[in-house]
Image 1: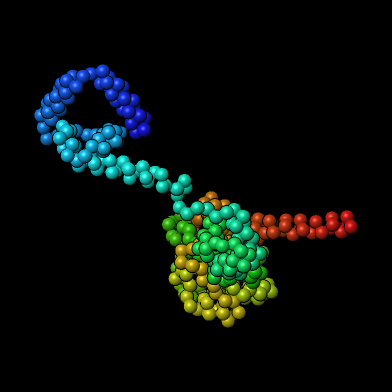
Image 2 (image 1 turned 60 degrees about the vertical axis):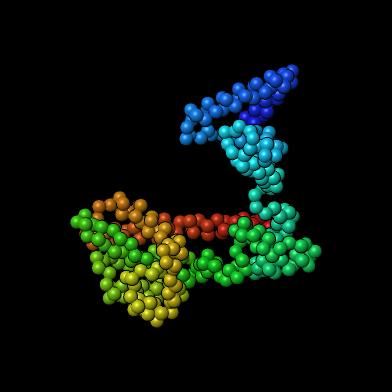
Length: 342
């Protein structure tokens, strides 16, 4: 549009220069000829209306806006005088909006030094909320709105203080890793199409896996007995678990939680459809599917249980604890190296 408007302005400026040497009689003759051509054009168009481009509207509005309304009504135009006046109002409104539009949409960004100070206060005082930080900024003579502090924290991905003061799920898992168990059901099918349900438990601290069993019908009695077997196995191995993470699957009866509670193990339910809250167990299930079940033709339940026992032994002794073992060996090596250097 700007190029088109400039083109119209230049061409009409040359047209104005062409009119200067003409006499009034010649100009009147040209005006009558133009009026007749407009009448002929209107007669040929009939009910159809000519379409004006935005540049044509802007040029006509700028050219005719100085004429009074009576003079506009006497002109022979393809549009009504009110339309030309409306075009002029729209042109002024768009021009004013363009001048008033900020360089960047939205509220202006806060000074970088203030943002860094807010993030530093948040990092050094994790229990402070945005209102407390806002108050500390006022004490330092920095005047910003409390909503600005809140927006800085939000843009950085930091939650407000009421959520930060509460224990997050990841912090809970890290602090209770040595006392955490997690269990889950997963499905597979035999060659005959029989669906089998596998119940497994994993220890967070050692990544040791326990396959509690497999069944075609996970009845309440079977799941409860699996819980009893797990408790006896933990007692025999001297493990002291305090929490069991599981989902809200209806396969777990109330007796399952009761058996664990009698052994001092509290059941912690994950959120609805949030498998990441039981990510360690879900990752093992994914590994079991990818490395075993997707590569093996399972004949029956006995064959499935045998394959799972073999994979359990492989995972517990070779694969699952390999990374933890390497980390322990690396820490021991670094300790010996530092002692030798001193």
